Length: 141
Image 1: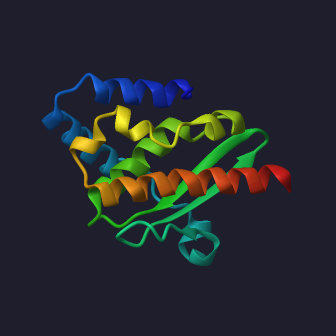
Image 2: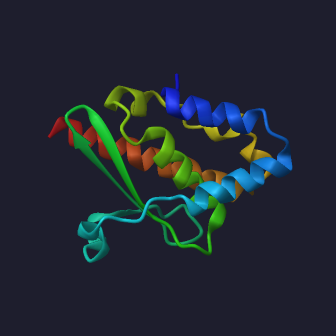
Image 3: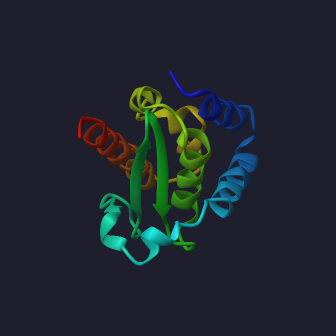
């Protein structure tokens, strides 16, 4: 089960032709929120996702039972950055339960498998896995 915001994004991608999906992914790449100042000079507080081909970092924070996500993805990696933008738009502010219940392969139902390489898809799955692991650790502390 996907949070409503992420479900809307998935549905938009699913209903769009392949070429439009690529443009949508690039739009999410451009709309990825900038890192807050507290992370810019404290890169060690972000977790690197080693499975990504380019340097990619993620941090999750909890505010009560709500999850907030922060990403550092280089502009020269637009597809991975676009996926981060999708996660930011679809999961930021979701509950802990909603984030943890997000299927690891939800990107495939969006048709992203037709747009990006299997290696990039693996990196995308790893990003979500890191988020979930961080959320579990934070919720248990």
